[in-house]
Image (cartoon, rainbow, N blue to C red; front, side, top):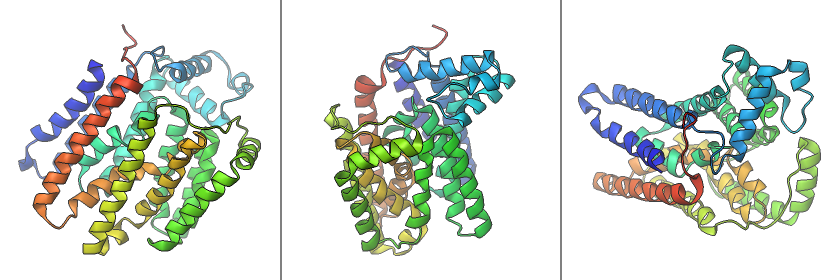
Length: 355
């Protein structure tokens, strides 16, 4: 577990060793650049046959095939989206090294999420900690195709928030591109619907309605989704570790509660983070459906990464500055505790590819 602990601890230490005298902007940039580099080196250097390496070996194998097969032969394989295969072929031509796909995915996904955090968060240090310990980082460890698709959608999200026709068209193109990497990305189009709601009762009712209908018609939705997306998902009750699902749900709820408290004292908060709050509400509802079928958990990953921005920004806007320090420290401790728990129970032992 040394590498996992070293990764998180070194990122935390870096933040506190960068002098404030450099200025807030420069400190943020240096911190995020160094944190990005550490994550890329650790994630990119993983062996493809680790304990939780079933998916990793699959992606490793596809990249090796892309190095050895012409594109027309590569596209004959089913079960993997054509866009992902084309991406592999392009990368394999540029860098014909099996391990490179791990480094690329780590660099691309971490880079996009850090870019999103830098643009929106009021505390980038806390956002990076939340992203790694509570956010989508654990899923991104092995879900390469959907991770890349999610990150492309988050670029689209920044365009959608601007509400300009030309940028909306560009966002649609990006979502279409993401769907060629993982077909579930089409579901991100619901963001255009969510944008029409104000933060308040209506978006809560809408999200609960989506949740209830998803439960009632789960079998029909699964059948339709499999036909439309060419997947083979199955419904069924979640049978894994219950603690692993309950904790994120509680954290999402706490993030929304703190956001409400902040909004009560600062009405501008919901204006600044309107889209993020709405995505969080919908994402939380979808995530709870993992106990009906884990497919909904995967879908929720298109929306729940916003917690990396919402929670730290809400904490920073608490009225009492002493409360900000106390809640921030408490948040870091809880995040680190959750990370340690997951490292021992879910991540698996870290093995470097050169071992």
